[in-house]
Length: 379
Image (cartoon, rainbow, N blue to C red):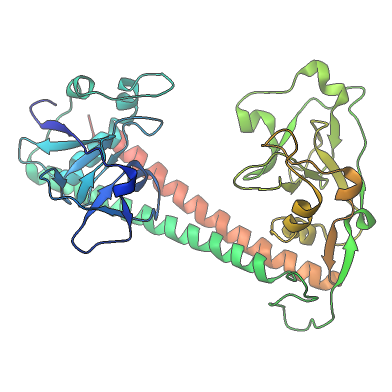
């Protein structure tokens, strides 16, 4: 590789000299997040040096979990945690961008298995790859650019569907101080009631005393109730303690008090696995006794119940865990329309979920297709 590129380190720029969304007379400051994050707001700096990258330059992340990730098709000044590749021969940038993608795992190996992976000039200089003629480079680069554009389109569609669902969840339940939602289906005009969670559900106190159930579930804010082995790639629970775990049947709901970016007061999820398992006794397991289960599941995907939690609970000793008494939790007010409207809302959000899943499947197929071509078209 030493005969193909020379490497140059990016610039050290103090945070106070970065300006968001200012373009006139300034240069874009390209950071790791501009490569690894979609729709990251751009930042600009006052800079008149000569180490500017162009649309045709490659640059790579040097440090951290994303070390080895490559970017191009940007103009500006790169941060000092990025390498800039300066070509020494006549090459097609889009082709070599894909070369580095095909060598991703080899490059990752060069960064080491430390807490802070890092790439250096010497390691990258040892990389070897074949270079076809310029015409073939351009043809291959164009082919993969088309694949990348198709993947980007699928990602945008997926993001759009997720935002659409989020928007509907915000308007299909009554807001604070209101008795009906702002968006309703035709034919429904009655005011909604308010029921307490404890009036339409029961707490499940069943314990796994005889250890009949060996599979441990976890409640993920992002993925819902999922087998612990699928989520962590191994069992976290201690088999000796399974007798004290709570039994969770199909369609039971579970509140996990663990706080995350996806769940600021902890998630409430429904067991959709179609099987019985066990969960840590730290979780609150409850069973809906009145109303449509899908409607309730969708309500807990909204943020309206968060305010009740914040008003009646706290983070307690651990910053990552939300504390609320069971008796208080059961006083949570639930907006409650008639059963037919509950079913209509639940079915509508279900259809949106189907569209999201279908679009995710299309995206996954395109990503797999690109990966397969990367393996077959580079040596």
